[in-house]
Amino acid sequence: MNNLKMFWLTVKSLGLGMGVTLRTMLKPAITLQYPDERPQKPKVFRGFLHNDVPRCVACDMCANICPVDCFKIVYTRDEKGRRQLHRFDIDMVKCMFCGLCTEVCPTECLTMTGGFEHATWDRKELVLHFVTPDKPALPVDPALVAAHRAAAAKG
Amino acid sequence: MAIHGCYTARFPRRLLLKDFMESLLGMTAQPQRLHSAHPSPDSPEPHLVTDEMVLNMGPQHPSTHGILRLILKLDGEVVRDVQAEIGYLHRCKEKIGENLQYNQYTTYSDRMDYLAGMNNNVGHAIAVERLMGNIQVPERAEYIRVIMAELNRIASHLVALGTYGVDIGAVTPFLYAFRDREKILDLFEEVSGARLLYNYVRIGGVVRDLPEGWGDRCRKFLDYLAPRLDEFDTVLSLNPIFIDRTAKVGVLPADVAINYGCTGPMLRGSGVKRDLRKDEPYSVYSRFSFETPVGPGPRGVVGDCLARYWVRIREMRESAKIVRQALDQLPSGPVMAKLPRILRVPPGEVYVRTENPRGELGFYIISDGSPKPYRFKVRSPAYCNLSVIGEISRGALVADMVAILGSIDIVLGEVDR
Image (cartoon, rainbow over all chains, first blue to last red):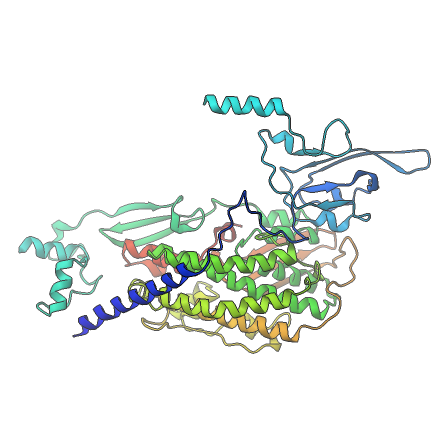
């Protein structure tokens, strides 16, 4: 008798479980078809770093707070003692996206953007140069990309 | 017949369809209980006893939730001894703590127990605040910390229970659990900007205030969560197959649990009512009313896998209760204390423990007055909980090892640090 009861309990729980599954199936799907549909990102999203160079005063605070030393900042002083920024590189490979640097920035020129889709073919491309004018912040060399793709296709 | 008899004497008996039908119709006696007959070397049939076999479970094994190697000594299907080999995920979290300023370390405390980053942040922040001594954390910040910690406890338990279902063989509840956890991560993303490594709680408060309408969205989520937990119970917790797999498996008596330093749901599953939020209230936990669930579960005995599972299930409801109370009482005001950029910490030492989803998370910090700690030690709950695995899995079957390991709810990022 006990076994019959166990048998019935198992069948019953199976039915109850399948009922939950059925109810879930009838609900609208919450899947986001990612590359076509974009998730709504909050304002405070911690994505790739961006430095608005004209506002930067080269105070070095971001480099001091950074736990992983991903900043490379070079500056000189002009005759009035003001700092002239010559180089402001961020190694996004090292960056751990903690956002400490954006909090200490006195002029709020260093911000975290919503960008996160920066897969590249070369790790060096993820070192962002913000001051050097001939190198854009997120460089993509079409020739290099084509060469890598060809190599990948060849196997 | 004799051969059949040897077989049943040598190996634990599997439930066959024939047995099932026979027992259903009451033709034969009940199948004998597992673990009942294992010949020892001095048994009547010593020629049947073979050597012990050493089996490696891991380092790459889906149910180890990370990189853990269990060295099993097997006698047939029976586990005679288990040795846990850890260290595959060691990232020098303690040494890093000695080489960073106090306020830089929050971002690393996220990465220890990556399923409960907020709880780790809170623990570290409280430790440094006590060491500094003179910090007045704003009331609102304390409440926000409690809300975040309890939401993260729910999220962490959802992962633990969902993956436990997968370990045992139920895939559907896993997807439900992750669907609900996703909503908590959305809430966290709004306040902190990240979904896993929040870095939200700081020494002296929290980074920024809650965005507009966040409280309402949080309440909406809690309303959504309650029926989902009932659903979860229907699908998994009260399922007879699941209960059969977990009840009376991996029994951990209370005295053994205390001796091994087990904490959290592991200890409470063994029937010990120990919760640091109640026993040594930190932050503003003393202002909320909530229960401390203890084992046993709906069936089985105190300290088995089902009891631990059941404690977690009930803790989620208690956490939801705390979040609701905190949202109701949430005062207004600043969320960050006034602090210098580089923290000056007086010489001294402190040990602060907080209740993580996995148990007691302790930070032991020695300061020599410089901006960096002299010694930084973390007492991680998962590490101490894992140490008991040899004790509770001796005599179990290989098939039950996964159930036992899953019920400990380890996060290898925290075990190895």
